[in-house]
Every structure is written in C-alpha cells, then in structure tokens.
Image (cartoon, rainbow, N blue to C red):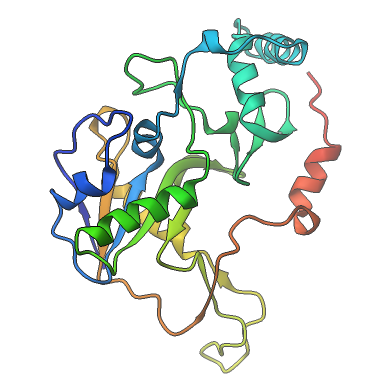
Length: 256
C-alpha cells in the first residue's frame, strides 16, 4: 500500500470545489482511495462560525462555569452553547463535554475546532460527512476518475490511551468495514466477532502522512489497497441499545 499527500492545496474558502482542486494536483488511478480532512470539507461547505452567533442559555452557562471551576480558568459559555447546538446527546458534562454529533460520531466538544480558522472563531464538523464524501466522489467522476473512493477524516482521542489518531466521519465508493465472521483462522477455527473498520484504518494510516498543525496536508491518496472478497458493511457507529459504554456513561457522574 502506498500513501501520497496531495500537495500545494490552497487555503480552502466557502464554495471551493475540493474534487476539482485535488484532480488538478493528483494523478488519480482506478482503485485509489482519497482521504480528505474534515477541516477543508467544512471550510468548503461554509461551516465556520463566530462565538457571538450563540446566545447563551442557562444550560451553557452552567456547563462553562462547572468545567471552568475544575480547570481553574474561565470558560466561554458561548462555546458551550455551540457544542450543545451541534450535539444530540451530552454523554459527559464535566471535566469536559463528550458529545454525540448529529451524524452519530462520539467526540469531545462536538468536534468543534478553534485552530486554523482564518477570520472566524470556530470550525464546525460537516453536517453530513457521508454526503460530503459522495459529492466529492461525484465531482471526481465528472473529471474522469469514476473508480475512486472517498473518506472524510478527522482526528479523535481514544479511551484508555494517550494521543489521537485518524478516524472516518463519512465515506463513499466503498464499505465502511469488512466482515471476517465465518472465516477460518490459521488453525481452522471459525471467527465469530471480527469486523474490521477499514475506513478508520485508512484514515489513521493517512493521518501519518497528513500531519498536524501548521504543517498539515489535508488530502492523501491511498493506492494499491484492496478491500478483498469479504462481505462489507456500512455500520460504523454503534446502536445505542448495543453500546454498553454509552449506557454506563449515562449513569456516571463526575465528582469534583
């Protein structure tokens, strides 16, 4: 497998055509997977905001005061309001806000970014990242690159481990996971639970190339990788009924 950063992309502005920008800078081939950081997808879709756009509710003020007391510094309740408006559920309230976004992703602060946002305070995640991936893929197809899959990525922390890694938020042109259940292991035993999240693994591999901060390159072409003959699935986010960790978090309360 090879990974190639798409270089010389300009600062993305609302209305920019990511497919066009990438096609002009990358020699795409059939079977490639294009990973695109959610930051530039959000910028192209105009998902920037300013704190003054969020009138503060009593709930947001309470959250900001509580988190600020634990952190030992003042927290802006307008930011807490933005997080609430981008979320469907608040799983942890303190010492940080762990949320479910409106498209099902679990992350801190609804994935709202405050870095690399020229002229604005906040960068929100794409509203529907899979639809974003489908639009980029369709744009590439219009430019003669019909057999290229697209994965919209972000970086995300993990329970029980330090550091962040790349994850998939949306995808098009491929399945999210491949199902090894029913396949034999090397000793002939049948696998019973293994479902491999390939879009997350490709996002994580691409993040090694994209980098972070000011040195980041937001698009990567993955080449010579094959899904194989296994069954595919588009189930990436666990259903609430099957998510034991989420159920436990609903019963958990932070004690200061």
